[in-house]
Image (cartoon, rainbow, N blue to C red; front, side, top):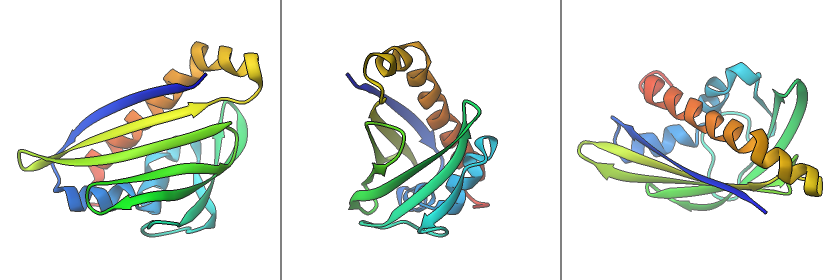
Length: 151
């Protein structure tokens, strides 16, 4: 079983500007301040490009967690994909798409993941993990929308 969801966010930035902001390690850290997320290995600041890896450390559910992800697909300024290479999920994939829309950009996030731990993981996915992950993406997108010019 996997969890998948799609978020659509309209942001008043040109696609190129938003694409760069969405792959900026420093902007990601700012958007995840509530979970004390930070880069601890790999690319630790600036822009990520195809093949780049970053290891994130954050606190979720009262636990310190690490996840390493790699940019596996990169088409400036249309889309990029990051995928977990090591971490807490059985797998995790996040496709970021940027579509010009009326002087701004429609940003589409397509997220797929599966929790570990077999049946217990599937119960967690349905009970709270899917909603929790969607809220993280929504919070990130709200941050990008508010802080685009400042980041």
